[in-house]
Length: 605
View 1 (cartoon, one colour):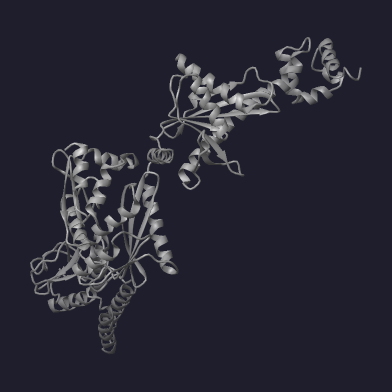
View 2: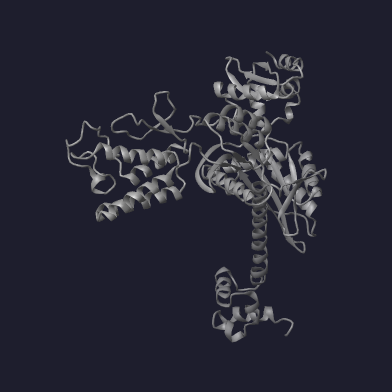
């Protein structure tokens, strides 16, 4: 379909809730979305495309046709959207990489020697399934903690087949297993320990501890002190296991805390799982910075909980998301448990969300390279200035003191980094008075006259021109370009009371604040400081030469070598002027020393 046909079809849609499915020329689903009113939402993609973000523009450019499914209610539309995203994994939807759900621990007490194993799904096979406890790593830790606490086997031997066939493995010698592979071990005692493991998996660590304590006291009364000591160690291990809250009775957590943060190029969605006030685990997903963070987090939350097989009693959010009430209903319908989604406003819950967001930021920062950070900043700057991300930026500044030694600097940033070999400096010509506007006009004309002539070092044109100064300075630069028949994006750099660039300003006087975005603010500040540094360094060099060398140059008999020797000895022109004749004669021939002395003492003579 052509763009106009797509637009016409979108305008013909009903004002009803439903989902829309965008497809490319190969009939592949590239995006799935939900709408309260299909006509309003879908038609937005094909109207005023200039206001779209780069990602949306790219997606729209690949749409060949689309389908819609009208739903009876917003709730049905939400259910359908979640189902279709999971089914098609569309390219332009933000997707979780891992949607396999949490593993369970399996224990079949019908076996003679039952073993605890980790499985991905619950099966209808008569065995007991416990959990989920969190990610595979956390589930493995739970299983290992119970095994070590009760000294159950962790090897690959099969019982009773391998009993008495070989020597005990290293676990036995490290006191991590009771050596169940040895002949003479009781299967009844083994099953009793496995039953304790089952109780621990169900969260009944207090009853297990009580049973072990009774056995320990009984052994002590029978004067079986070695057995009593072993039971004491097991009791301590079970109590420690319970205090750590590693085992939860069939639920992942009572509270999940969602965090979201982004760098210039990467965003991260993080989930912290809490049970009984204790942090159990963390999940996170890193992805490119989305167009709308609320929509991204909303989509990821839906995918996350619908693929995990359970949901906590409460989910704390960093900000409000669309359809939170409807999604809460969906979770209750799917899992038979009410889940409350809310944004905390005060107290400890706010701190928990801040912690989750901090974790998200650290993960996003960890995977963001310097190049991605630079490109992300340029993308943000381009968006602020309503232009494509500027690859090459040139910045100009004027430096003078009381109208003397007027100079200008041009610094170049390419792909967000300074390109020092392209820096240029200019000595302003035919101006004796301080006139920043005339100076700026002259330097811009000179730089781009070289560009038009194709002179070496000036061949490249910038995407963006930054002028140190306000709207009037920017207008002067634009006028200079127009005189040469050139058109470029030009902005002035407006400083705050701490001499930092707080905003960019158009030649017409429209300010664009940049101090609200830290990365762009820091980047423009770096350009401004570098431009000023380069200008002031050149100005100081010229001024130093004029002040230190001009008077010595005019004295007869003082050439470069004698001039250098004098400055090395006396360190400054002032010290030379105050030196006595005998002092000068110790360094110079008498006629040269007299010439220097008389030059600085004319008025006295």
